[in-house]
Length: 410
Picture 1 (tube, rainbow, N blue to C red):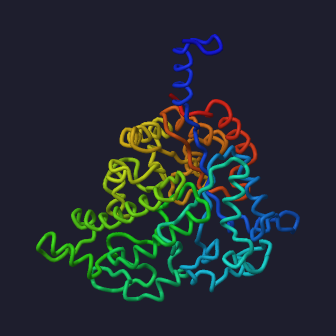
Picture 2: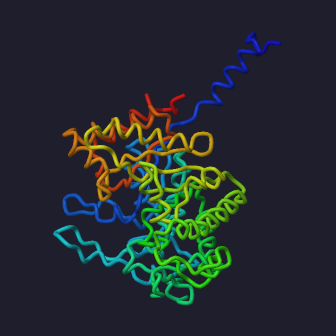
């Protein structure tokens, strides 16, 4: 059988080859707040509370060849949209007239009161430009614990976390309470309703939460029922960490179910710190049993937050660490490797520069190519602020994304 003179076998082969081609993603993390103070010649460059300002932000991010844009939904003491479930953040707007240097002062930021809805606007703009719209969600919403506690948490002290001594922590509510889980699922639903096709849970930005703060009555009662003993006094006890990790896993299971019911493809990603080299640190410090999530199909993507590379062999060790994680994710979910402008972990692009003596652009190229060469599904850019990826680096990454790294390496 032939079609237009082309053998059917060749048509099938061509279709199969196309099906195997997958776009190598460049996932950029973006926060309106990080662009709010950018100025030149004494004038602000972005009005981050308007659609026009959002379009300017997106234009800057697109200079890196970004294909997926992960907008921050909350942090820095303000919600980025008018949530019906979380009101505390917008009651304390950020006063940007208070600046620690001679930076341009620009008054208040009230994203949750801006019209139109800033987050919905940003996600809509992505679709209009053929980009995947996503959300970068700190786990959980009280990022920068100390002055950004969520209003819902403060209104429900009966759900507050406690340490082994029983001392409560007002900034976090325990996952042992069904009401807390439902609140988080409600926030998740708000993100889906605004059009997020990717929801990325960042377990590095967790407000300091860990299994050390889940000594609440329902969690302890479940331990007693399961083990017949009192919970261990050490929050680093492996069995205790696994016990607490079960609650996080069940939250992700419920989120995944909500995502599947969204009526469109929605991906759930998890950003895991201390993942490379492999070990139990993610579970001990973040309640993140990520290998289980991968095996059970609860996540569509794993984002490596940082790679603890060997300073004697920075790129060789990075390649090996990527490959170790990829062995566990391949065939289960996608993997995204970091090209991080931030260096607070001590393993971002600036730290590679210290070790190699290379330019920012040279390091970023090597890391992007390494991720592509080992067969990862893309890179994650943490975070794209105004000009923190230099102009020549933006051009280089855009060219790689359009050329050598356009598709995932077969």
